Image 1 (cartoon, rainbow, N blue to C red):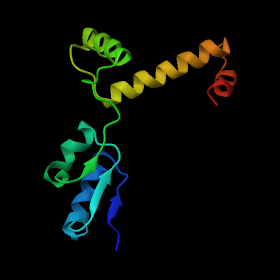
Image 2 (tube, helix red, strand yellow):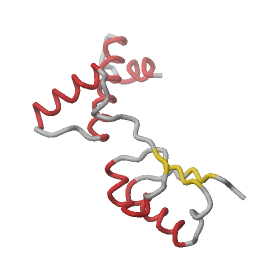
Image 3 (cartoon, rainbow, N blue to C red):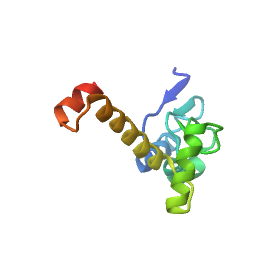
Length: 116
């Protein structure tokens, strides 16, 4: 009797699982939500993604100064638009750099406490 299926899976696992859900007829009368839909997920999902609700946590077309700085630097280095994985790596390094700066050291236990 569910109205919605929140399907938290990614890439090929999402594609395989969604195909199985469709084959079993489980997606006929309910909304399917995949929380993180990126190019890595959409490609393997193919036609099964039709009607699936999803979101992308970052869009390179967004009007955001910090995002544009990242995009410009990435394009200068790699001559292509960054993807989700590139952004997540960049974000992780920015968080780590801020923690090191705040901690005043690269000492791992100290940085971990600062991250916590």
